[in-house]
Image (cartoon, rainbow, N blue to C red; front, side, top):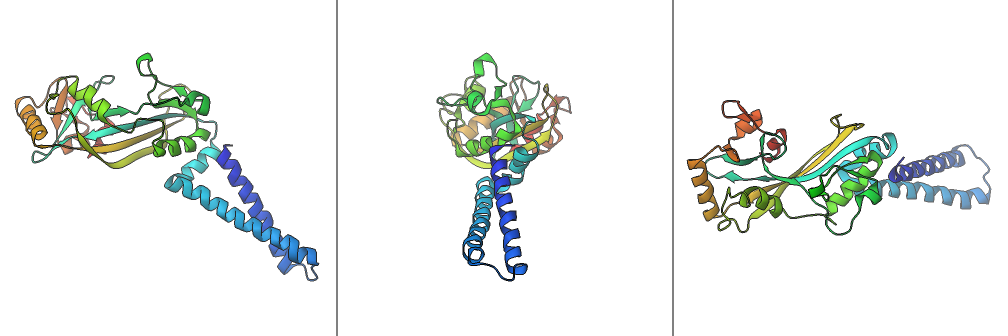
Length: 275
């Protein structure tokens, strides 16, 4: 059982014991002593109050994630979970209703620009959460790893805080579009982007990896706000070469179907989160 699960159990026991005593005091005991009336009743009321406040604080701290957090802490604390924390960029051409995708480097498919966040600073997830990173030697700071479910509530709270991790989206944009010369450094030396939503797939049953039981995938979705020069460059790129080995301009319907080019070419399943 995780730390939050133990706290909830303690609050629950205190609440039950205090409630039972108050029931006995007022509905069973007919000649209660001053010790019952003053000391024990006061302790029982304090127990009920502190338990309710404790429950509220825990529930409020996790918000809509509370029931998932409870499941992790109480029912499946030692199950192995694969965690991936990433961001995706919606790059949409106004007027044409086309989305710019790039070819995946690891899977033969087209997908949004983006990728997993990286750790920054000296935070050690191996020591803190006993995590097993799923990273290659070049990307040891990538936030994709295996961990026991009991640590997941803490991980989600930490990720939401933005501490000790990347918070910007420029790195992947530069690596996948500017560095590859799909777009020019002149017009895309900077970009403006707004976070529009977060998509989370928590504790989805999977068995892609050894001993793994669940997947937890969190995507922050950003919309890139193109200026006039950037829009003109992408329109020209789409007009001249709409589909290449490096990128493709696709429609909303093609993203939903997860394929394009007469169903010959695959679009990543997670791409639908940007539309």
